[in-house]
Image (cartoon, rainbow, N blue to C red; front, side, top):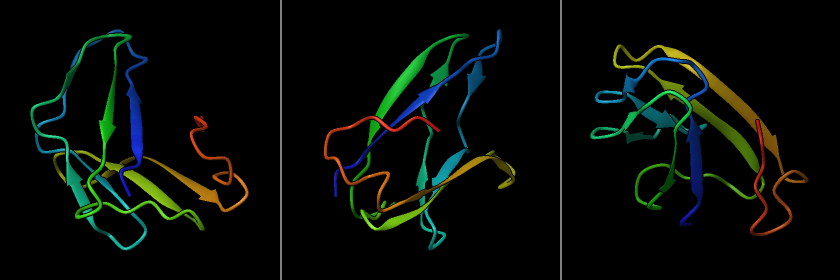
Length: 90
């Protein structure tokens, strides 16, 4: 529980994430409402275990836009997350 996700905006335009969400492998969602990222900006989110759950055994993280379409997604395994406190870049 209490996993953190860092979102980094690499394009030269601002994006408002109202209506967007992160989803786990079980399709549970964590809304990203109230977050806007300027060009090159980053934000760190601490995820409550009550919505999105990222397993230490591996899983999937998906970024969905306001229409529910996949914008980006990553898959990770137990070996990747075995070191606590480590930042994993996807």
